[in-house]
Image 1 (cartoon, rainbow, N blue to C red):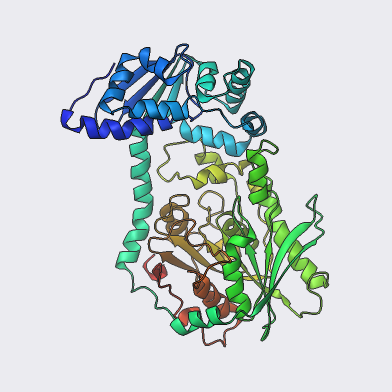
Image 2: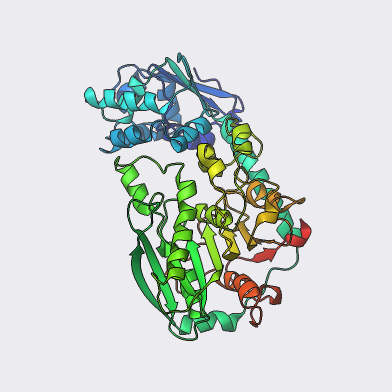
Length: 506
């Protein structure tokens, strides 16, 4: 039944929403008999039977209301149904669900979806095991498409309340607002040292190599990308840690900049959560990253520093392993904070991970909550790390609010005001405010309009990476205090994304 008020919005809104509604159908929550959708703003409910339809046309014939929506939308529903419902699912789907069902990261994703949908007729919440069984049954019955999956799911009726999307959007806006207000009220954005940026682009002063070392905590050798300065090496070591399902290549722009300025840079491949692991997971060959990666990633960093100190890696280069800098992005930034000495705890994870409506909940909590079982084992500080740059780290739930004094490194936290995966409010502004973990002399720089991915630095960039001067200036401040280019001296801004130090306003 379709019941619509505010008729003036009907045509434009329903045409737009029809694509959104049906695009939501791949979510793992459709009942076998009936699908009900509650639309925000229009006070409208759309309900239709799945029945035994095998094509989009048969589905429309069995549901006059849906056919009317298709007519008003000039065939939009038919087109989307044909694209979404009857297209064959990837051959790897069964393997993916078989490996993922029951894994913490996957089950956290299902929990997040629980506010958007409700499945009637189940004895408990929909699980990954339910999805796996339904998909296997669909393939067995030669219905290897989304319609077949829906028909084999348990339950009787699935209700999708799109009003929840409005709630999620408003919550994200609140998460981003605090950063936007700090930027607006702060000092002027940092200036750009044009001569410094031009120097890097004209001078390719580094050598690149790939190697590996044995690591007792890994079943395979730890792969490394290394960039060394061609001249004027300063004897300082920098480690760069990549994020979830990423790789060193996404950050070689930072490494090139630093190597050109005299630093030796090592980028480890975190084999349990890198790009290759993602590809294997999507092929159904591996489960999602295991919670134990929270512990293994810091051990990767300690192992490579040990190898340098022992002369097994970069022998004869003469690097100072008692004062090392570390830079990380996303999960790599969380790793950076761990190695810098911030203590992990399961206290907040236990208290807050099961509430989808927590006012601070954001997408990064899917990852953070998957660490629950090992959080108490993640305190793996290495006192040789003396300076740290953490870009967009998931951290709100993981770290002990009282452990800031245990840091061995001076920390620069960087967050984009437009980041929707790891939003600035709960994950950056709050931890530095009011004496929380990263107070006590550490700094927060906000990138105005910066997102989660446009702050990275691929090696093929033809302009200076957005954060490269800032990263160098912060490292110089701690390891090369006599340098003329230091954080306190300014000039580390970007001509593409404004950067503002808001620490004094916290």
